[in-house]
Image: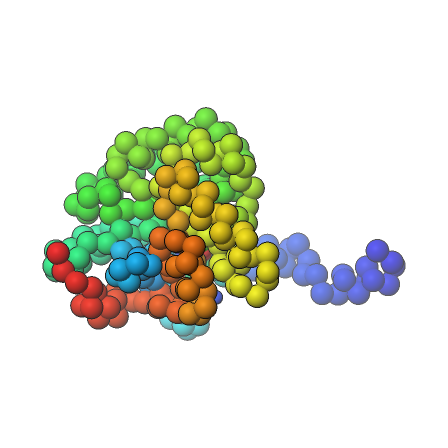
Length: 277
Ligand code: C2E
Ligand code: CA
Ligand code: CA
Ligand code: CA
């Protein structure tokens, strides 16, 4: 870097202390948010590509700030991860999502699977499996209606621990999927050893304007099926994308084409359209 470039860069790079200050104030506000029930969950429908019925929902946390309004998780989850607050938040999301899903079943809606994002920190908590069991017991939700979304980045360390934990979760009857598939470090060796039920193709590959993406999506779908996994495409926004995914026999889709994440009341309107057993 040339001298003047570096100076130029310096002007815009917030100092470490400034960043720390920002993180601390977000952390304080976030702790308050957890305590005062400012967090809520929106659910994004996942549709079977063949029957076009809702078969699943992804639980996505939002921060309903009293002054700032709705804050997206992209802004506060990273802070929650750095400060360890993610464990408390993640557990709350899991409990809330299980209870809500059970409630919908009791209302007579056709059962769906609820997907919950699991951060790496949560995954590496020694008592994760017993926590999941406890939440299922308390909510009364059958394990097959809970899916935990993990990311490839968790796979880089302690492979034996990961495989053991995934096996324990599977023995409990909980589903596990790999989120943002294709963006992280995942070797095929891991994939064949990890007992996961589904791959979620990251939305960067669903954009068909890059020619290579179609080839990537095709091979992810074919690979999932040969490993006996289901595959879902995230971020589907257009009918062209849907047609391509259908032609390639993708199992499920999630994206704005069908619905954005919605608060529970609005979802019930969509459920009304789902056929009953
Ligand atoms: P993610 O797990 O990959 O979730 C999917 C994100 O894509 C959501 O953003 C969703 O609103 C967005 N999305 C869905 N369909 C479309 C589409 O068609 N087009 C576009 N452009 N976007 C679409 P959201 O809700 O802002 O969440 C962002 C990220 O925050 C999530 O990415 C996830 O990594 C994290 N997150 C959200 N809730 C939780 C949580 O409870 N725990 C943890 N650990 N992370 C969470
Ligand atoms: Ca996810
Ligand atoms: Ca994702
Ligand atoms: Ca993502």
